[in-house]
Image (tube, rainbow, N blue to C red; front, side, top):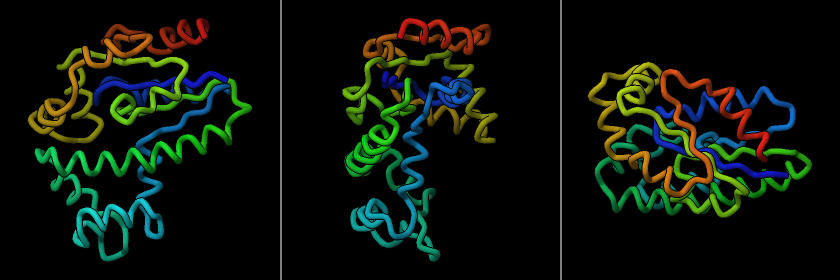
Length: 193
């Protein structure tokens, strides 16, 4: 079993890469963002801890997380962001490790995590692949994906790490530029594993 971490900033192509990998029978994907969403539902301890930390107002009337309000609370507030990350990392890492145990017969497990290094998840990976792309292309992709304007996309990217942060820490780097054949690039890498 090989555990491969995939990381990079928003718009670099992690979701596209995960879709390509998901077509393979020997690969299982654990998407850290999906794990967080699954744990953010009524009755989950993680959601209760968010409410304890950020107050009742971050919970909607139906008991679900008010993601927009929580995002507003942490945006440009490093202390609040740090609190949320610390809480999230604790629960997400625990859940991801449980899922890895359940998939122990799988040849390749992919952990798709934008905050792979910040959370410490890279310690559980045999290899880490960083996806990078030109800033303009990332902005274009974010605008299309999230149906937002360029100014909002730029502000999102500006609070994330530069590509060098990922390339310095990763074992392998894929430059997912316009002329990149992502499927071909990942197939080449998987042969090395």
